[in-house]
Image (cartoon, rainbow, N blue to C red; front, side, top):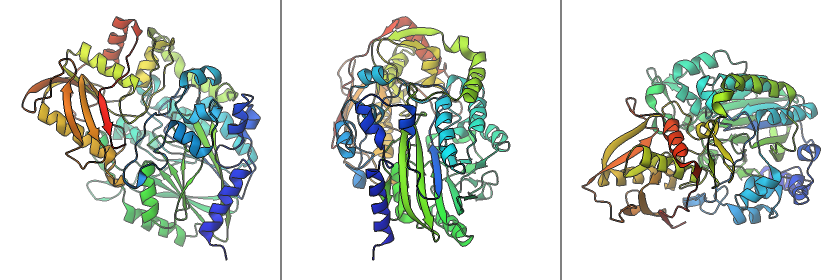
Length: 565
């Protein structure tokens, strides 16, 4: 007799052969550069339940360029496992042809050339077209938003997230969960959530004073779709007060809360749930560990770490789906649910190629209206770039190098520190840099660019703390984000070492001298979680620097030596 686990694996493998799982036909068609919208959306409808997943849109209303990371290091059990492979290794793992649309969408090699061929990605008007097409085929499909939605752009900042709220309300998701949304402040989050026409889910948000579940957020929501009773359980980003300023949402605590998650799964099963879906903003490796510890979850829709995987990853009987970021992908998941069990899965990661997918007229009209009051200011050209500007990667991206250079020059500092955030569009060589582009990589509600003194010893502690956040072999100690970006400072990192001994050979780039633990250095940075941080806004610092340069040209950054990867 075949086990349920083997049946699920067979079902997934078979659907891949049919072109319904993973990236399906678009990978093969891409090599011919003859992809049409119909081919991109082609899907052999399967089973009786459909899920649609978007996550980590980060305020991107319009199509953008977005380069995938060249380095994504896995440690411990994650070493060499997806999503911790990139480039040629990733293409080999999934059978992706060089130069294809799938190579462009999912890896970083030849990014500039392929971007010139295949164009921009994303755009909520294109996402709306895809969602509407899936709903036409499966009218009762569930649309689920993994969070990091009301954050990350010029218009999102100036409307306190209302532009994205309005656009998503038009898209009509059935539920969402949260992360950066809380950096709007708890009062604003409350104002928005109380008026949402869909479920706001987070089983792991608690009231600090009473140490009990926060009333504003439901732990789960039931849906009846395809004759199946579905429970969607929300899992907000668990490390909010560590990664983001706790003073912005002091009444809430977060955490992973595995025991409570298990209680919620058991509770919804007892109430008749035939399919249990976790809408998560944990990050992929955290989701993998949670799936190994919590039984009864059929599907985890993963967010936060911005991974885009063309096939589900199976942990026990749980399938984990990763749908990328910045509006670049939409996942469709069809499920066969019978006799209160998930018996099969078919999945397609759909790249939102803006030159292939026609914009939805209603959403395009709304986006134009949301942008109109800010258009003149946003589209002002500040400079040009001769270098590809990108952010993703465990260590410095070129956008981060530019931000660090701006901090060094405009704040008259010896060393610059920039947060290892993952969001933000890319810029191609020869492209104008507009004010909107700068805000696309700097927009947040705690933007002050500080200037302070730090001893060499304290700098070492900072780098070690962030490195442990990224490279601790236990995923539950990885709080998201990438390594803090440095300017003016070189160092060596051994990712296999324990905390306190990963960072060595710290040197001041300008002089080549070793960092003296006892000496104080002038350090500029931004995005401090401290409430009373003073300084100019980071977007003004970067804008002044780009204006002074005229044309941005960056040399390759060799300041970080990586060992053990």
